[in-house]
Image 1 (cartoon, helix red, strand yellow):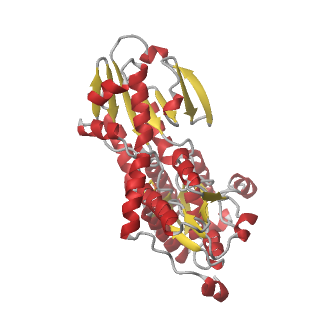
Image 2 (tube, rainbow, N blue to C red):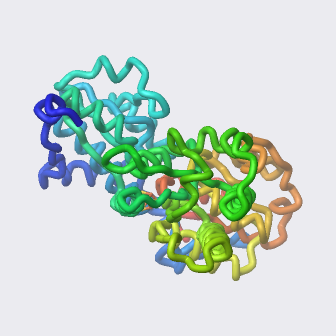
Image 3 (spheres, protein in one colour):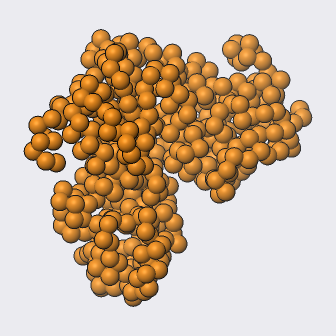
Length: 409
Ligand code: SF4
């Protein structure tokens, strides 16, 4: 950043003042807490009424990073009641939470490209950085403008940044396992360019990407084809003939653990086969604890009998998508935004992660009739408990069990 920019940069604002956080805690609880979810938790994650049983995973819903980001956004509104407040993109990937922030007058700014909207910000404006973080040029811009910055970037995301900055420092290219168009991966990729902007990165998503890159780094290949394939997933000036010599793997914090491990293994094997040693290979597992716990809890729940699994969360949520991937290996699994997706005993609207569209399916054979039914429910790290409660109430309701009966259970 230039000297002029440094001069206009404001110190970060501490919005976590005790009197503010007390009010925020009450407000957040009112918006997102659920007595039904607490009740099922207290029953060991299982509630059976008549011939209908709901199982809840041991770990689901809001993670510590998301809770912190929401608290800080609510606190920003309290600390700056009269200032304009903006948010880079979405605070997290959940439509309900983002709607609440909009209702509080917090305006979302574009996150893919900066566009003109950032030019209109002033030093009196507040800009919230979401839990995923933001690319360095976005941070530079808002700091140059002298805006108040409320940075909610999760500490686990910053750990990944430290790692890829380290790679850049010693001339290692960061191989980032993630989605090239995900906010967090874009923020991480910008840090992989290092302090001087000379570092390099390559983003891989699938095992087929990995095999292609491993093949190239071992025996070379068609550079034009490589460049075309990864044109939106590599650093400016990336040259596969030069920048695959020394590589370090990191990952978006919310990827599927087993897949990330396989990717690390394949890269290491390719380097060892090329060089006869792994001296030019580094790895650091950057899956966050919350993602891991939710995946592990689902694997554990899958050990019990269930007729179907509902995964609740925003359709653009990476960690939620991976829960769906895990579930559908074993039983009918539906990725729903909220309870309104459960239309009737015959129809469920859900997101098809393979075709990337919302579809409607018949599941009458699963829930109709008097036979005993067990429904498993889990949710991604960005899903509030009130949406999980609505889903539980709807499942019991469709099976003829009223809210009053549920309250007394
Ligand atoms: S999912 Fe992990 S990295 Fe993302 S906000 Fe939650 S704790 Fe942080």
